[in-house]
Image (cartoon, rainbow, N blue to C red; front, side, top):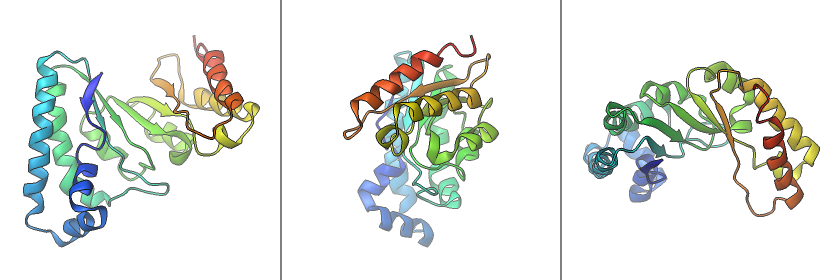
Length: 211
């Protein structure tokens, strides 16, 4: 897999303008904002075209759009200023037949439909922030779910038994014989080594659950 750097569009605009200033720009309909977005987009688009020319089979578009309880910008702002750029950046890769992979941390409830509308094949999102049942209801069967296993509550502070139950529940709830689910885990400082081992053990234990 190859792809754009993490934070290629919205977060890049935040770096340039500052998060608060960018949201004010969107709300105030700042007349220079479309030009700035276009400059960022053209840089990214050239990278996408070069990867496509090399025959990349999976193209990644990683960008954090969510916080703990909702998106970092309103759905209206996302649809007007960010989503059109996503669509144009994804189009060349889709034309070559590449698999479109997108990552976002945070809660995506209000943005998920728009994200899928641009042709995302694999969506990497957090499990407990979004809710396992919500993911099943709104995303299962519509794209491949690359589930980011909890690293905020259970894996750093729970027991190995808690971790085993979590991963089994996620596989039972979101998995199927047809596939469409994969799990990833980010190990961060402060996580007990026995809990890190429990994550790996559970993934191995249940990897053939639907075989």
